Image (cartoon, rainbow, N blue to C red; front, side, top):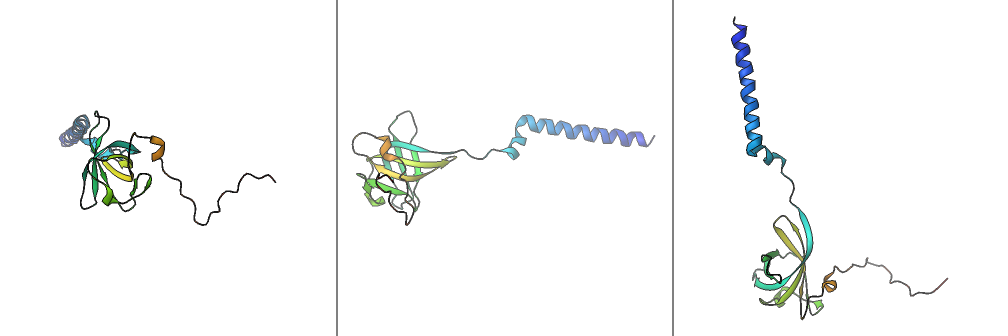
Length: 146
């Protein structure tokens, strides 16, 4: 007779444990342990500067497409700036300027790779990443035949 109450208690404990697991799964608590990494994206963002941080940490851009939200871009040491197609610096950025920002993002964090101050219409092919020439690489020879 003493084995039956122990067996019932053990079965009841297992049953409660299973019920708790099922309730946890249905409430989404178990999902926290299996979260997916943030999505990484890259692209171009067209708009107008509305804020230029005096500490050179970020800029905020109002989108050219009114349906999109404004976007904050982090500036780091590798961020490049172009003004009229030539290299520029952060000090040349002014609120109200038309810009194209080449960026990469992970989740909600967007880092500006290059900021182009635009004059006239947006011309997407002008904002492509420039290929870096290898150090010491010789220029291509002009088309002669052997």
